[in-house]
Image (cartoon, each protein chain N blue to C red):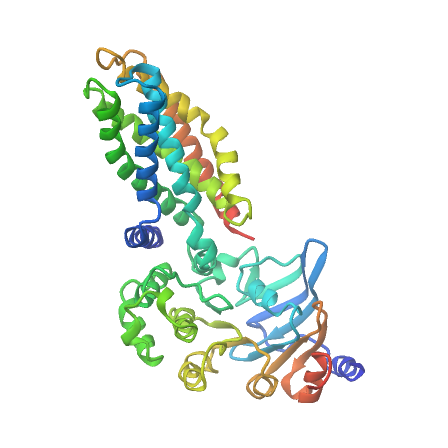
Length: 222
Length: 251
């Protein structure tokens, strides 16, 4: 637990100091919303279109942070420093995942109101939507940390992360879009059948968290 | 080179009588793809001894250190460090090894003090970390600069911090890869008490300073370019001239 906290606080401290990930994610998301606003030429979105615009934007913004998750570990010897200590590799996995979820929560705290201002007639679905996004964030983090860690030592890492990660995240998009579509329906949120989509998201999260827990020590080793 | 080969035959890397050597290598090979970097390295080092590793660039010195540090696996052969068979028991050896490599293993966007605090917490030294860090920073005269980001410090200052990082958890085995690089004579003297010989401290020292290495080591491992062993035995069995010959001729 000490190592987990040490790595997490280190990452958050560095992010607060350098602002390398979160501002880029927020700027990307807001810019994308502006592009959609004028590209679609619509002042209001609902249902599946609204869900697609929001979730695709969050997903691509997340990739900016996922690409940078292990930059310091790779360039400044963090992998070696952590492996030289009597630390379980899963502490690194968990700390990076929690840091990524924190970045995504900050992103969504800013991007969701901007999205609502640009595209929504009613804000009533936003509170339950935040819960859907949290489940999606956990899935993004569980898979993103694994892929980012594998790609960290590759020269083609900037290409490898989206190429490997996006197909793996299709179930997250399906689950989150299925739930968000109902919450962003024209005429107010509907909760019919939302449980199925939330279950898919939760199952995905648990599966990839367990996969990460099982394999991460092996990934860290030479 | 014939002389070196003769020395090697006269002083074979036979196992020492010590019941539990701090380091025991038997037929260690390490390959990267098709290229062998270490070839059939066999040696033993007792607790408290210093091993000097000599050899020209590309001889596999750093690779050997990384294998001993549990950062690389051997391709073949047996490796035992502090009584732990690697890589199976690497987790038992980690935390007992101090490693000072070419990279300082410090985060540029953290201050020196923050880096040491981070390392201390990784090693489970939460309580005593502040006191130990302050003492080390004071000994390398970095106390006044400890609040600055590592990225803003000179190479010599970063090396001094790296020494502090390597010895922060009071390791039983110290792996030193050219520890005095970037250090001026005064700074080198400052760090010497931290990385120099000490009771029960086993050291492996990679260096190109042949005279100093032979003077301060108990045993020597000399590697030829390509990773083959030129000599493995007591330091007294290798003359400075022989050691220089390993580099391809006397300067």
